[in-house]
Image (tube, rainbow, N blue to C red):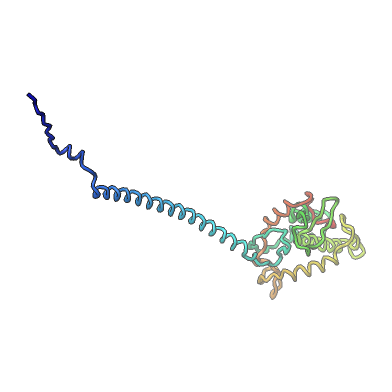
Length: 268
């Protein structure tokens, strides 16, 4: 007897799910999901590139702004020259201060009584000029305009210049000293002889030099009446003048001195 065995195929949801063929619909969904992912990645990439470019552009603009500011500052014209400024650019700009002129006759003028008193006055005058007696070394002359005056030389200290206000002080002392000698010794004394430390009398040259210096600076300060002046005149004391800062001037001249002498005598 033969037995016929029949195989019954039972269907189940799991089996159907396993054996079902992919549909075009599912393929489309997968493609859509992949497309969305690629699109998001592209957007992130573009956004990253944008912010990177923006970052560098920001720094570029910042550097351009700084460069423009420096260009404007460097192109600005220098401060206009003031009365008494150095036109060659060798000396620094010195600030200004207000100074009241006071009666200092007893300290800085001889009383024509004795050589000893005149020597005391000379020592006080020496403190009015910086170390180096106004002589300065300004370095290589090639860095200055061709119109700068020719320098002079002192005992192998190189090429030197004299700062004008110190030279004017020396001239004024020469005149004062010559007058002191004339009053003390009379017209037949030694008033026509060179002052000790000088090679020749300098009085006449100083008269003309100080005349031009006074006219050059043209101090416009208003000076009123004071106790010692004539009733309708002024002795100049008590008025407030605009002056250059003496301490700043002393500091610069002293820093560029060729030697340490501090004197109002001597031919330089």
